[in-house]
Length: 379
Image (cartoon, rainbow, N blue to C red; front, top):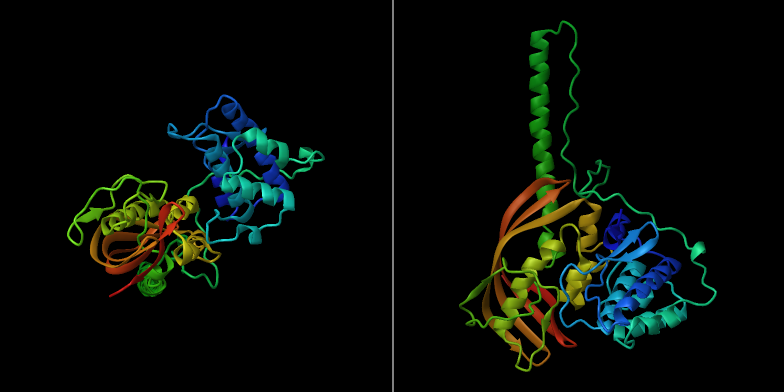
């Protein structure tokens, strides 16, 4: 059975692969990409989702969407991003030095950096340098294939950040029970259940308070922007999810563009703060402190994974309040957000609330894209 390397990484709790394992994956994926590139075609959908482990190694599945305007160079850049994610546990970001978080020989590190920068034009060029002549694939340790599962239950442990709701074990029936005794026993268990349940719910509420500071609320990317009237029109988050942040056009990035960016993030983060906890999506929208808060060890996503918790968002609304600053490379906006949030732990609903707040978004130009650099409440 084919299992995506995204699923493998999740099941390993973000534990990265080693250099030899990734080098072998690169060789296998590049050999398959070469068949596309030799015909002057591009795969157009290289990712940890389309890279799948099969019994004989890495299989590059066809893209989930028909590629448009893809190039062999873009295939190689996407493959480098996937490889770096497997080596570090996190996708590369312009504000993050991925080389400091993995142990590589100088040759492989340089090759990945060149792939990421777009220095290669087709897979054959990379194959010639990525695998040394003395590389023996039989010496590479196999990658454990996980059994896909959804939100496995975690037994409560002492010191858990979010306590479990405990259910008393059923009492086995006794022969010839005394009716009065059973009634007293049932009454006692009921009182204990109410008190214990109230205490646990209090603790859960206390733990959920940092949610707004732990998970960046509202930032996304928008490939197609719809003109909007500043400070009056609002954008819902129910639109289609986009995979890249807003491309820079010849005209100045406007407040309406910022509203569209944030509205897209509200939709995309549904796959970031819930399975599959997709940090690739987050990297498309976030940079600087906003990215670090989500992707770092013990950050938002890491905490959710470790505590078997996820957020489920309902419909959201984004309204531009004012433009604070607007330059060629930075736009600062006050944006009002309203969205429904449900918090689940071990597959059970723990809290439901509606977030209504005004946030100051610091949007930055990163290369030819706009991303969210920071966000804070202004109320």
